[in-house]
Length: 418
Image (cartoon, rainbow, N blue to C red; front, side, top):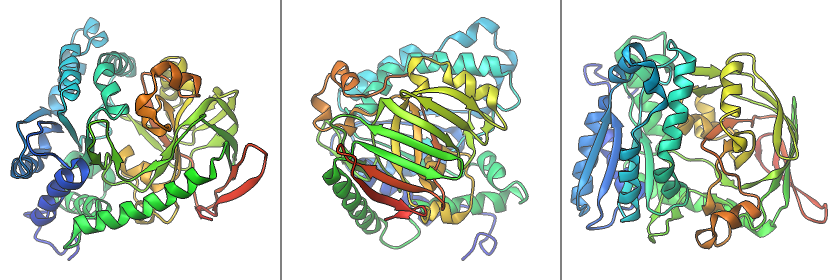
């Protein structure tokens, strides 16, 4: 049944929505009996929040605490809030979240807000508020990037998001189409979604096992407009699919996911690269990004659209001009083949190989959970207030793995695993 054939008075299939909630708890989090759950979501996603709470309690959750946001409340701040307030953020909330994560509370985020919500607002206010929020969020973010607890991100097809992805359709049709795309990418459009995820995770483990066995010192990317060498951090480790957090629980942090990823050496990146897909960032679409690296740092940056916002991002802090992640995604990934631009990094990053500006993941080091922040920096890990993924892969991308002795091994040819 297609979105157009379905009864559009109920554009979101309730059976598949319930499967998504179940997958979030049983695959995304593998929530343990007695474990608390902290959940954030847009108010529009309340139908999914309710199903998640039900599945969480069925799995033995201790306490499920939802925190909801609302687009109109967010806009009210930008339109009526006092100017001085844009350098503030709810640090008390994030400190509480950090305390919860340190006490083994699981973390689940539902995304689904209008990705262009702030496109009409003052970009200076948006930048100030974003920086203040990034600083305040650090205590909680550190628990996430260091995998102190099991965490997961999923999505909900809100009307405001659907209208961005399918602007030429009536709202109900757009919501139905986006719901179908989310369910397909999240592998819940079948009768055994948990089995489908087990098989997918096994395939991703095969890729990471091969890459970790190679012990590459660098990756060389060649594509139209791109000639880039990304050094890999000393003692880096490739991850993909399910990962085990410090609390011993194996979780799938992102649903969907098609990537295998690791930590680049933030001081060993050179060459130039262009983006293969637009980056949607806080209400701005940044397109045709072109940057040049010297000794790991971006020294030139251009974009055909959103260049001013890109430069503000790069000036966030010293680490914002360096890489914190490198990820490999085949051009044949289901999200790529959908042909959709989701305006949402959770999906768009899984359509193409990508890199991320900013903070690295300590998980992507051998024995990373035992390393101090100083040791991670010494091995090439990057530190920053931001972590922003943008896509550089396409059907024309070739990637070679380079060993320490200079020997090369094909990794990708024509955008596919070699």
